[in-house]
Image 1 (cartoon, rainbow, N blue to C red):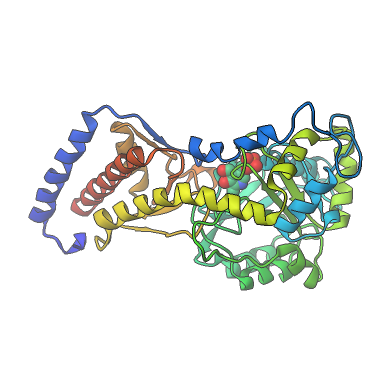
Image 2: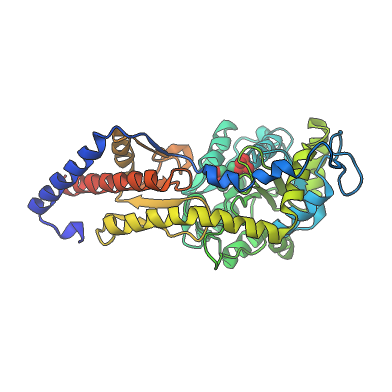
Amino acid sequence: MNYSALSTAELNDLYLELQSKFDAYKSRKLSLDMSRGKPCTEQLELSVGMLDVISSSDSLKTRDGSDSRNYGGLDGIAEAKELFAKVLKVSVNEIIIGGNSSLAMMHDTLSRAMIHGLYSSKTPWSKLPAVKFLCPSPGYDRHFAICELFGIEMITVDMLPDGPDMNQVEKLVREDAAIKGIWCVPKYSNPDGITYSDEVVDRLASMETSAEDFTIFWDDAYTVHHLTDNPDRLKPMLAACKEAGNPDRVLMFSSTSKISFSGSGIAVMAGSESNLNYIRKQLAVQTIGPDKINQLRHTRFFKDTDHIKAHMEKHAAIIKPKFDTVLSILETALSGGGIAEWNKPNGGYFISLNTLDGCARAVVSMASEAGVTLTKAGATFPYGKDPRDRNIRIAPTFPTLSELTTAIEILCLCVQLISIRKLLA
Ligand code: PLP
């Protein structure tokens, strides 16, 4: 039933009916937090065996004979570099294994760019009159927060079904030398679940940029996080940049935060050898080496990419029913109404819901009245401002199935009620 085809009287009747359902939920004084994409306990249990692969009676030597308990190994142990180089489709010299957070690596990289510049920079970015970043949106709020922290001006670029709108991107980077980078979550993007097409990868790799040190921040956080047997495929970005004659254009990031333990995983960054050698020199001043015992734990537990794949299938078995539940409730409540659209991702951690323009903030606020906390409306856009006020990020992984069902039923009621208010206004 398309809402715009209903008469005022019909809309009023429907509003009253939905309002009484909403009031019934409200009286239950629920408290359901759907605000962040965290793994649930059952997912964390999948990796608990990792705590047993190293004990005091095991050798704590790495493959090359060094002692993981001691200082050294600035860019990671050889077996971790080998494993994650395969995951990111780069060579072992093109990867650095860091600490527990890829976000920290991104933050530190931008921080160093501000203070010293990147490998291809002529001037530290903070010495320039303006530094701008392209932010395909909706996107990851914490990327935008880093830019805000460093005073980097954010320019919103539309997301299309196969990645950022490349016509916009190409024009902007060609014309404005102050644009130094772009944030990309190229596979199962946060929050749209979009995987960039080969054409988008190639255009990003080869486009003409006015800034000589324009850098793609390629956050491949969900690279092995498939939900189906027919996963999306992403063209390897470093290889595409090399082919296009721009080998230093990309810095890639990823982590095991949603493979092993969020907060106690291992993070990685990758890029050309020139880029990474420049970064290694700076890292050597910051630290004498990362937590190699955790790297050893991860490589002994995961062994190889086949084991990671099998492990991720276990994650999918836990979270796919949650994604399916959200999609089926959205379908039942909202399909055909002309009041909302949503994506059906093949992987990642989110479902992105678009309401009618001007409704998202009111929907999120109404849901909170019934005890459902959603990601703040606007958070998926630079400066927290969704120009159309329509995007809502749904994070299905953490709640139980029954909590999720209740939360999404309430969310749908709010979408319906706020939409009717808009249509009647
Ligand atoms: N990048 C993206 C796109 C994310 O969605 C997240 C977490 O939600 C992160 C990075 C955080 O990664 P880490 O835990 O490695 O800092």
